[in-house]
Image (tube, rainbow, N blue to C red):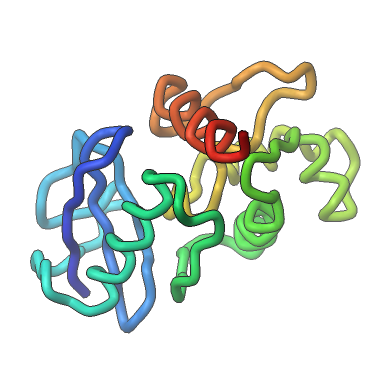
Length: 164
């Protein structure tokens, strides 16, 4: 398990890998160096780890509007329902948005599951790559984002700008 930090238009990002897969991307301010937001140890900084180098390259290309789809091994840790939601998030296309209700329906659930989808969305440990920023309110408004609404707005603007 190791990690690196890169600068980005949404602030510093800490990228964490474990056993050859990306497990977390964290927004600053970061938790203490030894632990992640969920209290698990994260290992040592390794700016030369080939997977972290590639993840950093892809993230920079995304921010430069040169990359629309990430190709990285991912291993987010979560419940079965959270995994289903995070898989559905990866199906939202670059520059597109979806509502919590839309995601619930994709999973075969009713609108009543929208809140659970929202909670799973908020627990996404690999933001940007698993594009939870693409989920908005049913009325088209920006709703909560673990990284803050300013970051969500910036990410959506990057994608919109790249499309035009």
